[in-house]
Image 1 (cartoon, protein in one colour):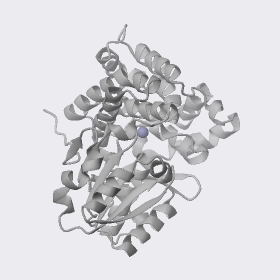
Image 2 (cartoon, protein in one colour; image 1 turned 135 degrees about the vertical axis):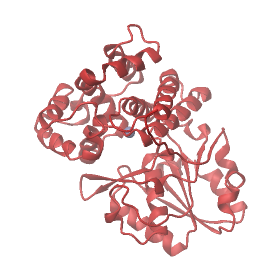
Image 3 (cartoon, protein in one colour; image 1 turned 180 degrees about the vertical axis):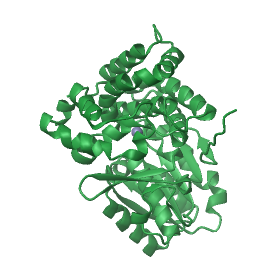
Image 4 (cartoon, protein in one colour; image 1 turned 90 degrees about the vertical axis):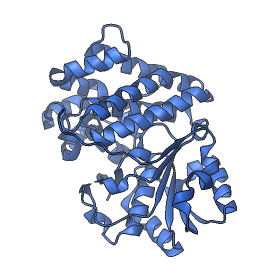
Length: 380
Ligand SMILES: [Zn+2]
């Protein structure tokens, strides 16, 4: 057997309503803790999703500081300001409830509270020194898989996306409660669900660290998501579809936490950084040209994915066609021009994408500036 390693979050608790039983589920982590920082965003707060967990934690005797200032593509300044408030409060444990931005922020707040290393020195892979505070993550979207990844992505300055990727960021506990995802609007369900499907596809074709465990998770995750994304989008209250989406996103997250994603995410970065387009939407746009670009090196893997989904023809083309069909059914944009990108933006976007070396090195085929430009051009 080839040598490999696999890591994940040590404790996963899944079940509808779990978020309302947090003090029991997290009892070992909460022992001796009096002050908790709860990181979220205003959309999640206004939707009432933190009410039950908050009431329950308070009833268990905990003081809770709600930090609801998270915004999409979390800016570094916001992360630092939230950390300062949590520090002043004397937080001993951090809980993140929300989409990827809230969970990524919660991870960094827990890390910055536990370590005196400046955030600016943590960017990159395995750069973290020191410890973090105990950390519980509860996703309210089925997409990023952030609850089981060791990665936080923030925006530095105006548009530069920087990532902290370190095993210290694996949470102590991830809680999956599909009831929290019932009210998600269709467009968010679609964009985040496609993001998760891309995680599975890119993990399965990742060039360097894919392994038998990440492969099994990528296949299982993709199958769950494929079987539920249309149902969840067409009927948002379909609980079994919501459960499958949440589980599929978690499985895909465990896969790409170990077998990192590649060019689809690298080319999506400039879209998020410059246009603040939803992360999953940018993936939907980039997947078809990139699969085409990688196919000479990854044909067998794409074929295996298509066969696993029982697609007629079981080929790279069948996989791309199916992803395009799903994008259409769930009603997601399929051209860059639909999200405000013009021809003049492409050179800068291609240049920015080429800077994301930590992802590009995972590609089945090497990426070039010309190829990146051509990928954008083909879906303009
Ligand atoms: Zn993603």
